[in-house]
Image (cartoon, rainbow, N blue to C red):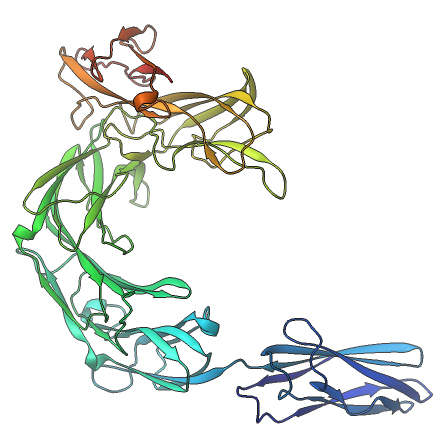
Length: 601
């Protein structure tokens, strides 16, 4: 049994003490006298102030076969801390002891927020969603949402900072039929507050590009600084048709509010517009109009590589605006190998990061198989009126070392003492140095310590399966062999890598001194070169041996699937190889090794 006193609403100076009856029943043949005592705890677990819980008597006699009651009073005027107070009443007598719990809550400073959402006709909206999110002070973490419940709603909320967003739908199954977004990025609740989201205050959004008024994919988003970090709200839509927006509440004048807009427009089967705008603002836009002109755009021609015929692929640039999260991408598949042309905006400091995926045969549900993806290592800035080229998914594929990729040693875990070696780097980065991920048919990674094999797993250096090691200094060699299906690629179907390094216990996660060699062969979109010609291949060292740390570099090339190797002299960062006859390669699949290299530092 327990006694619940509920919640006493703030403020507490005028609270009324609440009395509950604590009843005891005696099933015996003799009267029993019980000695009563109460112990208490405040919200922090310390003893509550005297008198918060008070018994009406220190003793009670329960007659044989009967019951007796005693009052327990909770007085929430007492004390300073807000939160849950607990009390425990102990009754002792007749050789028995009974303990009963009680709880009373002193509400923290709180207020009533009354919310009403109106449609475009000024009447209570029928189809809507209104969301109140606590982001600062005692309100942090609080959330309330009202969906499709016309009328006025009153919510009891903690004092603090909030964001409020409302969406009103003419037809919730079709946003283009009319959708209104009303946003208040900063709402301070320091008293009883009324919030009315009125769709009549919204204005239309119109974002167009040359010759096309309707976007195929579009979005807008705002973000603001709060005690909880950057908090935002936004939309991803099939275009801005029927979409209207409005700011509500005071302007945000501390410079922390930003809003972005992006949209993608299909021009034809192999080209599209991708535009993004935005930056710091004082209010969320009440309507938005921008008609993009051709001279504001850069042209980005993206080569969609595929070394096996009959593939499809898609690519999309993603906008990065200063201080804002990454924007949306929009993909439309086309035959690969091929070229897709993007016309991208250049205003507002926009940079663009392009991603690519290759697709295979469709499954029984009509979904194409994923056969690999690459993306740029960092966004790029493009200038209006200029043309740029990016090529994805062409050879030579291989490991890529850079920021946050490599082989790492972890410090001992504080709880278990375990320490690890782990490889975390893309093995199938394409010939242009784009980060790569591919489905693989087999993978074997092995760790050697002072020449002795100590562990093995099936992780292709993704970082998901570290090796446990001791803290002693030793020479390690980490090798991996990964194969991907020849149905997905006719080049670089197997990657073999080995890193040799010394390591011992470290105080914090440390990148170990490993290196790799990259080959940038001048291949076409099918990863081929004209037969019977001498081809100059740039060779680049990455990692610890790069730059002035490189003592020597030797490169070997095989023309017979790795059976024999020929040294290829490196001159000015280039090697010269002879392209093979038609339908053959420097290292034909399925056991593909385009070349091998050894670097010393």
